Length: 259
Image 1 (cartoon, rainbow, N blue to C red):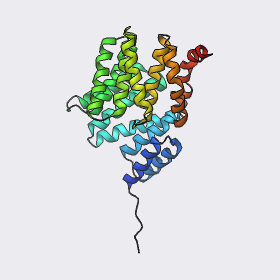
Image 2: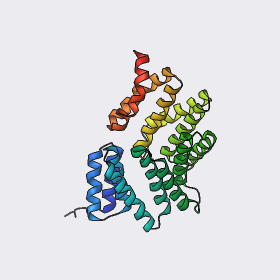
Image 3: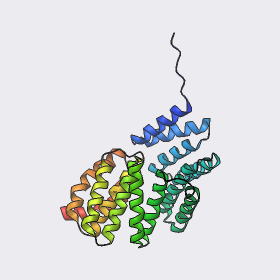
């Protein structure tokens, strides 16, 4: 008689991440909450934070992400704690527009990563620092940080990081009046995003938004027109409220141009 297999905590986490990859946000949330009811782990907290992000549950996003950060630090996992701190900086920008608080989280990430050899988490830190630099008008610093994020993404096989580094570099070049060069970076980043290989779906959504924002800024409606329908299909597939609401506001000028 065959013995029934017993599901392990790791199996539950794998299931939760698989649900996230498919865009099943409610199912993923339920899986991670069940895992946390059995044992509080940083991995389950981090997974729950992503499910809550897509469901626009701000309180759970911050609570779960901050718990993950503390647990990773307690376990001595400095790279994971730094990655979580970097995404907390992004959360502060997304939900609150709190630039100073975001900068504080990035400083925490630096203290954790600076003593370590380069890895993908250094790339995430470079991306977020570059994004803040671009918003502050520091285009030279933003471009350098974007290239570092892209290079580390390629070196360590992190397509999410590579696509966002390219998107940030493209946006920076467009802001610096190097439009043709910047648009080539943005085209490549968006193509990577729509391949659907990102481990974190928000990476693809963000890359798409970088492209459309750059197109509307320079009135390149023809390029935006070519990409918008593909981006809309991506957003529908993932049920992305973020893209179908906030980002789609950027499509207004494109739709007017299309008639």
